[in-house]
Image (tube, rainbow, N blue to C red; front, top):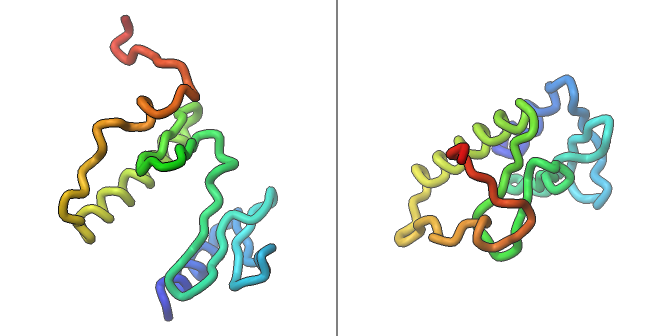
Length: 119
């Protein structure tokens, strides 16, 4: 069984997900009551739909993903993505791949700056 097939089988058991035909017509999909969330196009690629989540902001040209923490579920998302980032760096270290000094806070004026120090 391929990794994609294994992931599809595992995720399809989640109560809020159901296997379906993808709208693009290629491979298999998982959907919620609100729409498709994942497309399994091949044995090693999965497209995951994140952009409708207000907690996630993608900035073109950036390797950083900005998360907006509004509810407890957003913290769980942060923990999951942080775990993925750590696993990726440990499993596939790339020579010279270090976080850019300019994170998304420097690239976008999407959100106001807030003082985490309380002052």
